[in-house]
Image 1 (cartoon, one colour):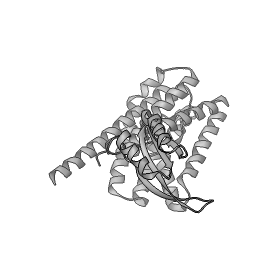
Image 2 (cartoon, rainbow, N blue to C red; image 1 turned 90 degrees about the vertical axis):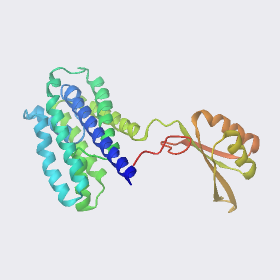
Image 3 (cartoon, one colour; image 1 turned 30 degrees about the horizontal axis):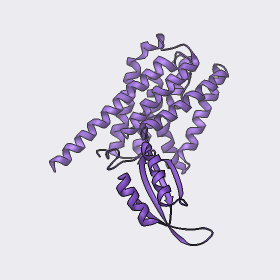
Image 4 (cartoon, one colour; image 1 turned 30 degrees about the vertical axis):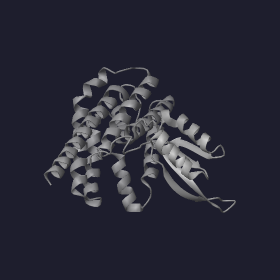
Length: 290
């Protein structure tokens, strides 16, 4: 029982630490890269950048202006004590770090807008990815999208796409059309970085093998490759015949050896090899602590 409590406490500490680091990196990205280069992001941060240049409102205040009402609505309509505590922590931490790093606006990392889009996308993606890994939130339009889904049943992605599109279009009007391209580059890099942080850089491959030489193939993979193999049953769409389908996960460095083994056992086998974004378990990455 005590071990379980210790695991939960360690998990709680890890999540809040990740959220804090993510909020700090996000603040640095906004104040050190995005604002000085007039490069907008999606969400509330993007709205804050536009307000900073149109009416001079510091982004610290715009974050609170948008997030506090959203937080109150979220607690009321989405509910959950854990949601309320973690989201409030994320909002307040981000606001504090935005205020703390505000002097960086006057000492930008770069003044090249293309480099700013790339650097900004990388750092913003890293920040959001860390917050997501902590199963946390810093408020913003993702919270608005969840409320919108609760009220209308419409996918959050639809609203987020509309909001981000409106922000980018506004940047083109307020600044210049080139800013639209830089914003799109930044959003693309951000998205890919989030995926990388969430899924990791997996070197694993997933192979599907269709062969009638089931016993020989199983033994070859189990004993020569020292990998597990799972047997499934498939039915040919044309012949209607049942055939065994084998599923096997291997490291990228083992793909050639696997193909050679299959060729030796059954030259007529049908093989599909695809990327496995994340593999958890024995022989690969350990399962995360809950």
